[in-house]
Length: 360
Image (cartoon, rainbow, N blue to C red; front, side, top):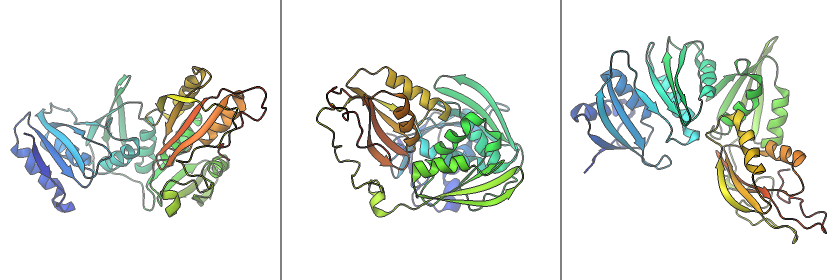
C-alpha cells in the first residue's frame, strides 16, 4: 500500500520542512502519495537541490483539488548533476506559473533540468524579461515530445516585478513570434492580473488585435515612453458572473446552445480533436491549416486553444471557400473550443455557407 503524506494542514513556514523530513525517512525506490492544497513542485525540486537526491513525481490529475502527486525517491545525484523537473503532465495554464515560482526560489548557482513536450523558448524570454541577464539556458535534448533544457540562475534577480504576474521584453523575441507569444501567455494569466510588455515603441497593432479579440475585457496602460523603449501594462478584467458561467458577453447565446443554421447547411461532424495548447505559438496556425486541408466535405475537427482564436477565423474567412464552417463550443479562460469544418452546402442557397456564429 502506498504511503500518503497529507500536507493540507501545513503552514507555509513548515511546508518545506515536512517534505524534507518525510523523504529523509523513506528508503530509495519508495513511492509515496503527497496530498496538498498548493503546488509542491518547487518544494520537491528544493529537496533535490539541498539533499542532492533525485526525485521522480507525477500528478495523478493535474486539474484535481487537492493536488495528489505520486513521488518516488531515487539514487543520489552525481557530481554536477541537476535535479529534473518534468512538466509534461501539468496543464499549460499552470506550467508557466509553477516554473516562474520554481525559478524565483533558486539561489545563485542553483538550477534544474526542465523536461517539456515542445521547445520552451517562450519561457526563456519570460525569465530574462523578469529577472535580467541571470539565466544560463542550455539545450541537452531536442527530441520530439521530450525537450530537455538545463536552466541555472547565475546571479540574483535584478528586476522589479511588483504589480505584474509576467513580463516580456519583446525586443528580444523574433518578430514573427512576438504576437503569438504574447497572446499565448495572456490567455493563461488569471482574471485581474497584469502582463507587462517592453517594446521599442508603443505596440499599437497589438492593441488593435486585443480590441478585436478581447473586446473591452482588458485595460491598456502606457506606464513609460521614451525613444527606443515603451512599457505597457495589460490587465485582464475580472469577469462578470454571467461570463464566468460560460456566457459570451457579446452575445445572448450561451456556449451550450445549438447554433441555428440554414436548412441547406449540414453541420460538419467533428471527427478529431486538435489541442494546440502545447505547441509553440509559431507552429499553431500551420498545424491547424494542415488539419483543415485534410478534411472532406461534411467533416470537421474540434480546435482547443488557450485563448480566443478570433484572428484565425478572419484568416480562414479570407482564404477558405464557402464550405468553411466555424462554431464556438466553449469559451473558458485557458480553454476555447471551436468546431472547424467543411460544411456540405447546396448551390441553390447563396447564403448557406454564412456562419451565424462568426466571431464579430
